[in-house]
Length: 388
Image 1 (cartoon, rainbow, N blue to C red):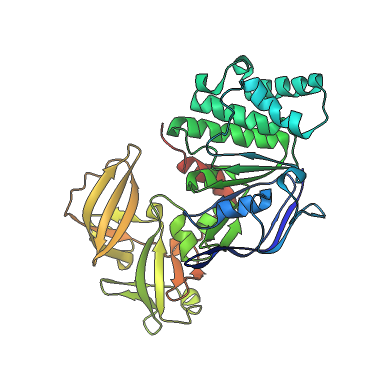
Image 2 (tube, rainbow, N blue to C red):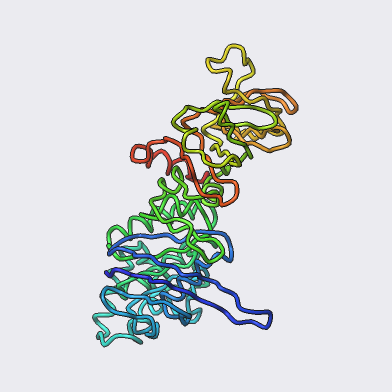
């Protein structure tokens, strides 16, 4: 187990068309035994950062430390790491037993009996004892992934590095393996860096998540901190399915309201006092809005926005309703079957407490939802669970 410290890490690739800065001045501390997830769109720098930690990429600038040891210029075999890849990388001519033992034979002075004991113990932990005599071609995708994980575990490394290890599995097996990986990491208590583009994995697996975009760090925090307290518009829009709705608005300080060509929403004096600029972007999570077809009967008619239904998506327990608000698309996640039809007029209720506000120019968050973070972790994780 080891603390990983990344200090001002920069990685630049040179190409005929010019330099490409894959990672830009990244500073991060990963605690002993922490499960941390790097997440972001393709090309954001998450896999490059992982490869720099592993020593598979040379660092252009900055340092990487394991504990108090500077490993920036060390070779991968000197770093006491174990990697799990997207494509499993199993030797096809070797049995599962030999695949799991190979790394120990190459990198340690353990005896054959000691290696065999480690392989047997790990196979039992992973539930693959009966597969040890099989070669990869005889194993399913999930079984191959367990062998690949077992090969990493037997090495008893200081740091686990995982590069999208579940992306080749079907949805049901991914959900199962997510749970198994979390339990496994908890039992082993090994510092783990996990890379994914899948926000479901990030939200449900990580102690903290690191959100990257264009090689730059956007936010570090617990999954619910990043979801309910996004640092900027990018994080707010990236995390969440369906994603957060955004509408351009102006802060009308005289009227004490947010102004849009199709509506005006009054805000409390305490919030208006924090709005320096007039150009803003209003954000609302799909699950935080609600719909009514009887605006006159609503207790807060001044907080209703007229909209037109464009598409409904019944999901079983919820229905995603897509609306048109003055040419802007807005999504609302409502419970049960609403019986709405395309083209129908509805009114969207936007509670002030659930509003997010962002600076229109910089994207920096100005106001967050008041959703309590500590009490919603289980329910939030459940909301991200995939349906088999």
